[in-house]
Image 1: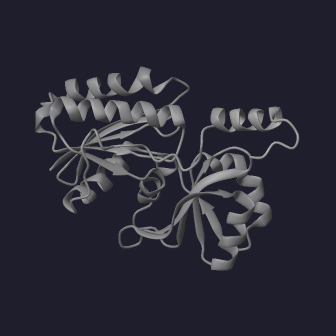
Image 2: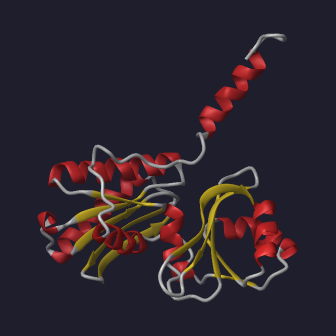
Length: 241
């Protein structure tokens, strides 16, 4: 089985190819360029390097959210375009699940945290010692609330994600359980994890057509929030909502 993985939910842009449980190629960059500038050139480099016939791909796994609204839309458009052109199924892989899958085999509680601004994170809780066990499904949460939840669970916790540098001081202040931070090679989103987890989901029949795929944002966009706030401020006093 050959699965192409696409990850664009954050600043990280990543494309990978997993063939029969072997990571055949991966191209990842964590740099301030739009994913419209990076994803297709990355894929083109992999195709050229491997002399890859794209028709031999069995499925396209895409990080389906949460994350950057723009990044997710570009990743979805790329995956949908390839799926339609190649007539291949898509596999929707939750972003936070794929991040946790980076830590396959680790002891303790795995806690990815993506900075969602306003003291919020996108997070989830997982055990990965013998695969991927979802302890708490991905969701937005206040970081202080998350710290309190982790203290109640009482397990050693491993953090990863772009929320780590943002909330490192808060973690040090609030966490009462042993904790550590994942090392550089596994502490951010990677298309390799998306493709590997996508391969498992594909075997389980968890696929969708290119037309069916919709990113899972979990929250409304900043622009939509700001528009709602403006409309609320402009509404005359006494007006029923």
